Amino acid sequence: MQARNQADWTSAAGAAPAPVEPLVDGLTTWCREGNRSPDVDRGHRLLAALTQSRTDASRRRPLTCALLTGWQRLILGRPDVRFRRGDAFAKGGRERYALTPHTQRDFERCLRDSTDPRVPLASRAARAYLDVAFFHPFADGNARLAMLTLGYVLELEGVRLDQVGPLQTTRLADDAVGAADLAALVLVLIRSTRQRATRPPHHGSTSPLEPPDQLHRDERT
Figure 1: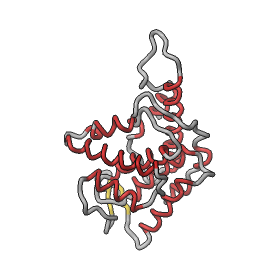
Figure 2: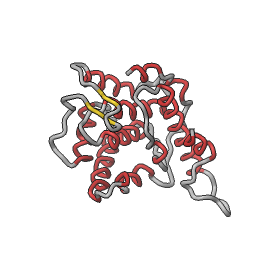
Figure 3: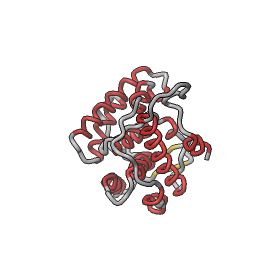
Figure 4: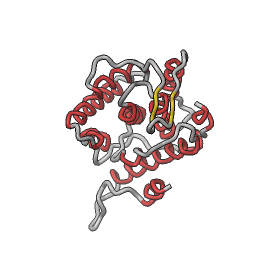
């Protein structure tokens, strides 16, 4: 929570264009690949969860723990998913996410922040992603859920990305600068998606999924 509160979310990313309809649906592609897992059913489960999340977005359902639990049941293919009952660990045990009597309540409050109009869209999406990653609400599948949560916040504003792979890097719970950098990267992805979707085709053009120079710079930092 300390890094979350320290990050300058209002300055981390500027205004994002909306709506954005990509040439290629990056989140659907990511789900179909099953997050590069050898488990072929994993991709099918992710697609089912993505479909449900977009149905929920079309109905403007608030982002709550109950909503995420429904997606997580589809992601894991299990009906018995519930908020974790003990401390969680990640990165080979190097990070510990303690469970307190207030953890779930604090998580719900953070999820409500995803609609705060004072914070730019890219920052809200990045922050919701990190909330899921670092509250670690479920015993398994939190990284996949975090990606769907980011997509949900964007979907509510009519924004879809043509690629999400650059978002998948290791992040630290106490890194406020890294949190702000993620928001900036989300903004770059939104703008580059719109640019590729709206620019006229020309001879010798690069692949529609080739990111602009700015995105390459962000990925190297």
